[in-house]
Length: 450
Ligand SMILES: Cc1cc2nc3c(=O)[nH]c(=O)nc-3n(C[C@H](O)[C@H](O)[C@H](O)COP(=O)(O)OP(=O)(O)OC[C@H]3O[C@@H](n4cnc5c(N)ncnc54)[C@H](O)[C@@H]3O)c2cc1C
Image (cartoon, rainbow, N blue to C red; front, side):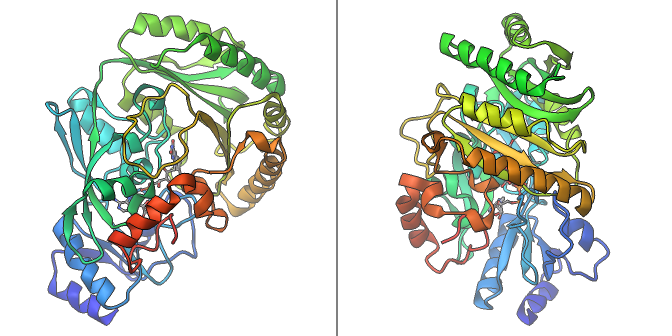
């Protein structure tokens, strides 16, 4: 640590905070409150060059570090007690190139800030349902969201990246490295810039349909029976639905995040009427809007900081057996307003380039279940965790032929990360790329562990 202190003393332009600094707590705080995960120092580089100068100081002196942006890892993996945190949030540029239909994003940009910048150019790119996450961390490990059926997952948008490697060199990722980044995230280096595809955006139709859920179990079945039928008949690629059980304005409800991401609002209204006819609606907030404004709304219903954790499982289908379990445990969801149950979906018709180099393996049509106990105090959280454990355990006991072995690494606890299962057929590829670009495993404090 002495050598790092010396380096920082000689580099007054590089900002940092230690536990004695007045802003340390604020800088350390992530989405989840964690009083015991306390890094020795938080360093806040403002450019790729500053990151490049820092990395060799850390590696030569065997100083372990982790990279942090949105701080939304559900298991606190972006900070390590007693180690160095590299906080990239100051590297947050958004440079739009309308001609090539791409945008260069600073490695530390927050999804919501990115959407605000893109909106100024009337363009968009896929984003997280809750856009307080870091865009690079979201996209590079998979990136599920409400635009996956229209434009693909977050990983599918990545066309280039600038990375500070284990030797402290700033390099433009070649195709092999890009393949590793698309699914392996920051396990090869610090991603100081990512170039993503952008799409023209006018008004869209989006919001949440809160279904009348006095009999929640029945509503879950009724809605999904109609949805499944509509899928068989064919759904437009502009329509994406995310199901959640929220303790919302009208009590505990099955709530449908509705996204119609096409400027043909008349057709969108027809689909809104159709979806709204599948089960009686209590309240709907769906209206003509923009991705940015919808994202701001989605952000507003999630706390900024909270105690919490997550349980997850992937299914090929929401079978009657799975819906029964949801119908049993959904109504038992504790009443605190923060906690929720949600279902991401990758539809069979989601677009993807067939030859895109990626190690993200889970490309079949599937449903990603997220059971998210959150609570403003550890006591409130404990009640949520008890509920979540029973719920996930019941889901894991359903027909194993319908359970996908791979889970989403971002939502999988470190104890349950099985690299073989998560990366499946792509694991050997990722291992080979890791050996090529980071043979010393310098970037070991990330989600993918080798
Ligand atoms: C409230 C909430 C909502 C979410 N919603 C969604 C969703 O809709 N869809 C979805 O797919 N996921 C979602 N997630 C999961 C989220 O996308 C991942 O946890 C993501 O990794 C968070 O990135 P971050 O920068 O906010 O987190 P951090 O904790 O700062 O970072 C997470 C990991 O990414 C690495 N990382 C991030 N940026 C870089 C970089 N520039 N260079 C190198 N490594 C980097 C970090 O080192 C760390 O290992 C959600 C999580 C939360 C808490």
